Length: 229
Image (cartoon, rainbow, N blue to C red; front, side, top):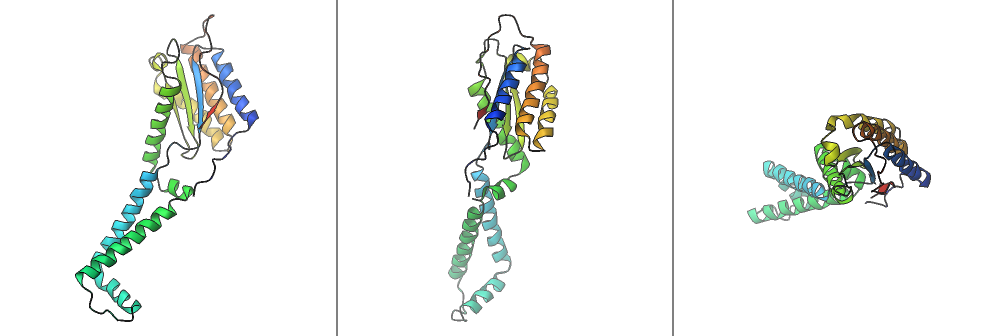
């Protein structure tokens, strides 16, 4: 069962990230938005899929070895019903499948187990989709020169995304952000979340300073504070 989300950062850590954003933006026209998410999806559909797979597998096993299971049921019932009809067999199989489905679903209410069973490619797709959605809401086309860029970190999935607005994306190849991702992950592996976010901000800021240097009349159009979801 899911509990309250962990408190990954304290007030000092949040201020450090905000200060890093302000420092990076002081050297470029880019507007950096940082988001720290506890997770990017509930993955309840994946849990349902696993429950269905377990239930169907149980039906297949019963269909392959029906005599074995009917003999066990006869022994449990004390051989009171030695003649099993087709209707009995279907009812028993459906009952077993329903139990397997419900049991698996209940087990997967435990969040760590559910996340362990989510395939990596599904996690990657969901994190990317959530990052793009967050970017569209919080940064895309919200700056005069379309210079917004999002650094998105999803803790449960251990994945991060960098999404840039048109003016940045047209100048910087996506592969360039790999250095920022590597700098972030190096700290995250050691449990240093704030340091990881700050390192990513610094790397992104360095790239933006080269491609989008700050103009004298540049204004801060997006908040520097870290957004936590």
